[in-house]
Amino acid sequence: GAGVSQSPSNKVTEKGKDVELRCDPISGHTALYWYRQSLGQGLEFLIYFQGNSAPDKSGLPSDRFSAERTGGSVSTLTIQRTQQEDSAVYLCASSRSGNSGANVLTFGAGSRLTVL
Amino acid sequence: GQQVMQIPQYQHVQEGEDFTTYCNSSTTLSNIQWYKQRPGGHPVFLIQLVKSGEVKKQKRLTFQFGEAKKNSSLHITATQTTDVGTYFCAALINTNAGKSTFGDGTTLTVKP
Image (cartoon, rainbow over all chains, first blue to last red; front, side, top):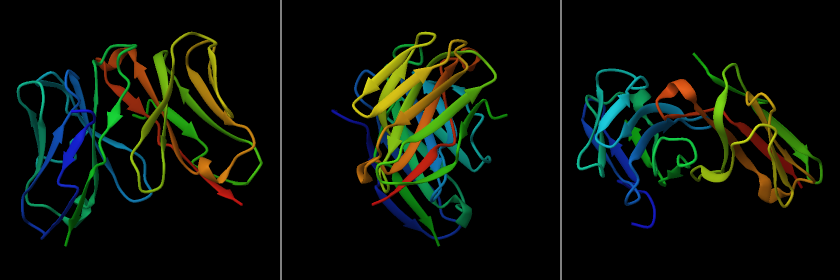
């Protein structure tokens, strides 16, 4: 597609439920990033994919968080047993590659997660 | 630990005043990018700097990359209310296997 598409745009869930957030990157972009942004805060790095592999998972806050990417395209971020502190906007970004000169990130509009 | 430091965290200016945000790293950067996030929006790419000492301008915005490729700045001349938002720098650090690292951002508010 023309841009990075994320769904759902808004998700309200009860504490303890699992949620899945989806990111559809720009066609042909091999690098894909997930960030989390709490209200008024900066971008908290979660995970980075190059193709289907994730060379850097260092930002995942706990083992309740996981992400996968299949076919070098769509990625899903799964949060199990959600907690109130998981409430935030989850941003996905993609770039042509992770290499210098080709790593300009295009962000999606984000998925706003609210855990009650 | 934090590899890209950005200051200040917040800046409040009167419309017409100038504004500068700084990005610093202890390691050499392959490149540096700047993004702007409007309130309620998502970060949008502004510019990329690659060469040592590079200076680029976009209307009232001036971007600089340090000679040692360890720091960068974004300067806005004569701010307008449309400049409000958070400005992030992002760097491709050689050791990070192709991953861009973001600074914490500088949030600019402009009083009309």
